[in-house]
Length: 426
Image (cartoon, rainbow, N blue to C red; front, side, top):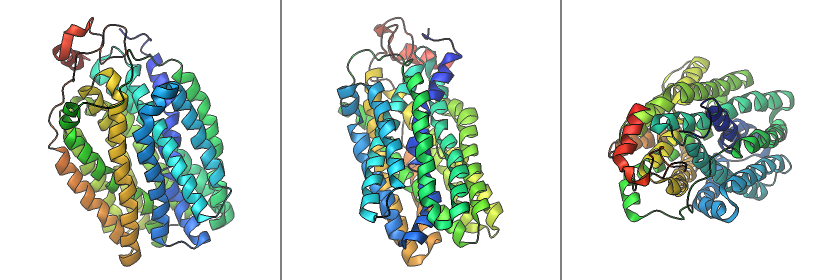
């Protein structure tokens, strides 16, 4: 049995969702809204614009790779809250300078801290359902991931409003507003993190080779998926602006994308990812995200194409991290979840570091649409690679009763068979 009433668990997961609101909804994706204004006001090339996102992604790689260290050094709760607060302060500081190297440093630091926030928050969310089976856990992880959509919606309301008042120079106000909301988000995160069950045993610093080998196709898929989806999100607003879409249309696009993400993550992916075996869930996610890129490249109508793209892309892109987290939860014992999610996030961030830079170079030479076609190719490759992932099985028996294991097994000797039975009846 879970230590909380069933109605308390979603509230805890929703409080933890403040992490992805800031980590991805603000720090990562709001940059796409602010990029055209920053590029116009500061006279950047597309390669320079993509370079700032690459700096952010490079920090993300390091943050994901060191997340277990911070969890072991300070405790996962304290590290989650501390890096969330630093991420909020980084957003505020971004509004205070126009110096490219300083902005690059702030984007790097923001990437590092938000990666730690996101990884540890994912592991905490995976522990909320201590006895509800895999499908219950998948739904709570999806609720946590819905924070990204909430962050995108807030970005789509705050940033265009700032730009509408001040024009391109309003990018500073946009970052300032995001920073203020990020500071406020620390409150619900603090309330939620106190109620997450503690994990039994010491958090693993790494994973055995057998675990890594079993998840190898998922690691490869996550690199390609990260590169493909973030290239689109980095430059799609620039494309729409170049095609004549004004600030109200851009706001409508971003809000639609965020709403689609939050709704689909909550109502569809939490259940679907928990049921699809092997790599079928990440393959399906990749195909749908690919389809979401195509409308802005193939259809002539600007706003209808943009909104169609927002709905399709938005409904699927955050199912990628949901699928990765659920696969790690299936394949690893509870004290290995943080390490597994961290390593998967490293793969994800490597793709996110490479994608925008390559897309920016292609955009400078052949136009933004040329750069966005890179997303299509990468996502197609990701879907094919994902299908090579076989069904995962726990590396060892679940934790004993009362721990933060996969399910309430009544003892460690219940083993993988009992764990699968829990998942089937959840």
